[in-house]
Length: 311
Image 1 (spheres, rainbow, N blue to C red):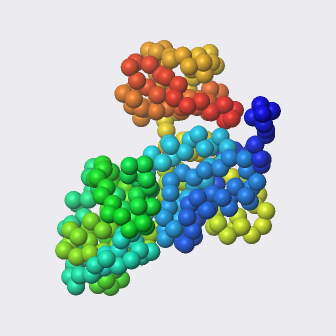
Image 2: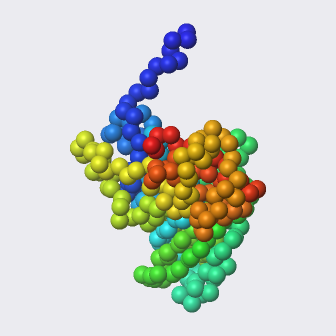
Image 3: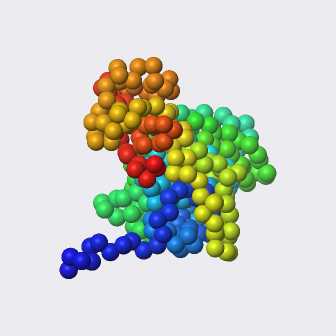
C-alpha cells in the first residue's frame, strides 16, 4: 500500500552533536538508544564504537550530523589504558575468559624499548571479539559460538604510544594517540607479547575523537535523569573543524551544489595552505555558512558531501 511510504519519521528533527562521557558496562549502541529516547530524536548514530569495558568520549550524532560521522571517525583519537601483565584473555580485555598465564614481568626499560615498534604505520591483527566480518558473520558472534576465528593483519597508524605510569609489577598505564581503526586491545596484547609475557586491557578511557574532547563530554547519567536540554548539543559543523575551510562565492557554491566541479585555477589565492590538492578535503564555505565538503583532485574542486541542513 503506497500511502505508507510517506509516513513521517517518529520523533523530533534535531541536528547536532552530543559528546557523551560513556560509563563502563554499556555498549555504544545502547548509549545511542538512550540519547535518542531522551531527546525523542528522529535520527541518531555515533562517531566511533567503544567497547562495554571502555569509558570516555563517545560523540553521538543527531539528524544532519549523522552525515558527518565518517569524517569524525577519520580524526585523531587519544586513549589512556591500563595493561594487566601476565594474563591473556580471549577478548583481550578484562571482560573475557583467561586463556593463558605467564610469570615473566618486564621492567619499565624493557617496556619503553618495545614501544617504538608499535609507532607509525603498523600492521595489526584485530581482536577476535571485534565487529569485523568474516564470511558475512561478525567475528565476535563466531568467537562467542566457540569457533576458531582467524583475522588478517590490517594497516593501522599510531602517532604516540607512551608509558605514563607503572603502579606495580602487574600493571602499566599508557597514553596512545592514533588514527582510524586502531584497536587498543590489540596494542596491549601485542606489546605484552613483545616484552616476553601475556597481557590484556584492564581499563580503557578515550580522551579525544577528532575535535571532541574529554573536557566537553557530558555524563550519560545527566541525559538519563531529567529531560535533557538541546542546549547540550554542539553544531553539526563542529565535527568538521579539523578540515581546512575553502571560501566560495555564491555562484561557485551553486555550481558545486548541482554536482558540477569548479577548476582550482578559479580559486587561486583562496585555497587553504593545509588543504592537500591531491585528494584532500575542504569545507565549502559561503558567507560564513558551511555548505558541505568538497574534494580537491585532478585540478578540480568536486562536491563530496552536501549538508543542506547546515544553512
